[in-house]
Length: 71
Image 1 (spheres, rainbow, N blue to C red):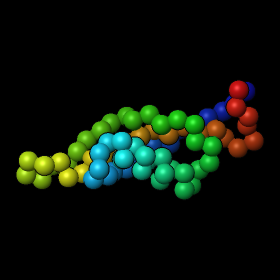
Image 2 (image 1 turned 90 degrees about the vertical axis):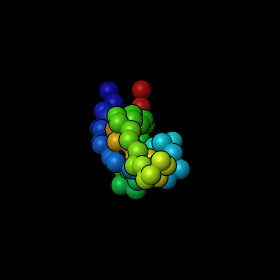
Image 3 (image 1 turned 60 degrees about the vertical axis):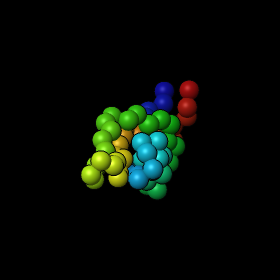
């Protein structure tokens, strides 16, 4: 039986929600291994005038615990 752990991270980008989600995974990958999935829990954006300037995501990232096998 494999066991996954879930962490929650916040990330942002000035390019879009997709880039913010990718940043969330890259940020998590700096401290955990075996990332298996990302779930975007919440999205929001910062607006300056009439223009979106920052895209933000709150992401739940699942990873396989060490000494576990997938399947």
